Image 1 (cartoon, chains in turn cyan, orange):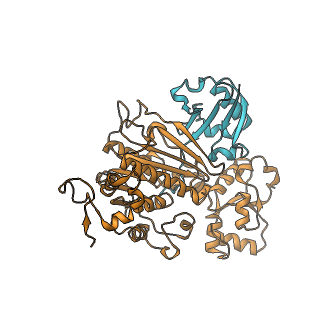
Image 2: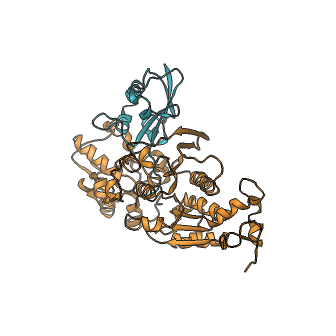
Image 3: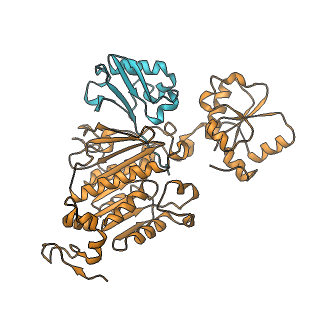
Length: 94
Length: 398
């Protein structure tokens, strides 16, 4: 299935500044694997050392959080839009 | 003093504040003639108590619009002072406010805009010790501080006290807005159970922010606050609004209450406020950036003396090209992110001094180069900022 992954601003430095990436994938897991193969540096920002999706990064298929679908096994349909939504904080930490 | 003119049919004894003066009717006339606000909504605004945490980029439009709209009591929390870098986006302040406590400058500005409302000033950092005491006197909270420790603190305090928390966050060109802690609605921990480790996500001070972005996001927070008070429209509860100013596009995602949430779930494990600095891992710079304290360093004055003496030193600048354009020390530019694949450009037999803006990224570069077999690599202590302070004041700081 051809799907589109929307890359959030904080992760664009690791995707050659691309705002979105089109790729072929049948599940969320496949889409993220193919994304991190394309952009190796992205991997440590999406996954912790034990291979789990980081807890400050959420993934949505269209407007639904994959935690309330079938997680990374959520199937994808042609034209689906995947959004990676990390927590952001622009203020100073003091 | 304006004389109170009764316009509503509410009984006189209902509430001493439940009337508008003649001047107030005039001031709020563009609200009063809209049925969605009307006299009823305007009186609700007058009786409302809203706590704004932070008076910076998000707090500025928020405070201004809440004050202008006639929110009767506005609490402000801030402990910072106004500096020159604030003025690019923090529109509560002017150039003559530089050096003043933000809380004073903000309260003056809001009173100047609307002398009829009450402004409470809390010149303090919000902490686990004082948060419940400060928050409990308000109907709802708007967090404009936009940093992780305060965000989790405000979230947990709002859940514990049962108050809505109108949330906004920004990064460069992108914003997130929603309402947490509303009855039956999700909280911040439902969305993100844990903060990112320090260093993985840059702040505005490192990542930059388009000045108008907090203006837009703060104004949306203000709109949601006013809607909650007057009880009209569709509040942004259970919906995460994403805004991208570069693409000029809004998107909306579903946000669900997590039954396993540690603070608002069915079996909460967090029932009182915790140590949020520790939770977010920001206990001191050393913990946040171990490399900065372990790599060999050179002080700016020593570097200057050695360069003047004609020592063979190779200056490596690991910042980004757009930073190099702001100011530079004439060093060879290889951004930190490109260092691993451009390491062949460096001669390991020469002594290398790496620098960045503040010394943080260059410490990582020094650590990387040493692990790659470079023996003579030093980090310029304090970066170009310290160079400007100690060696050459003509180098601009940013």
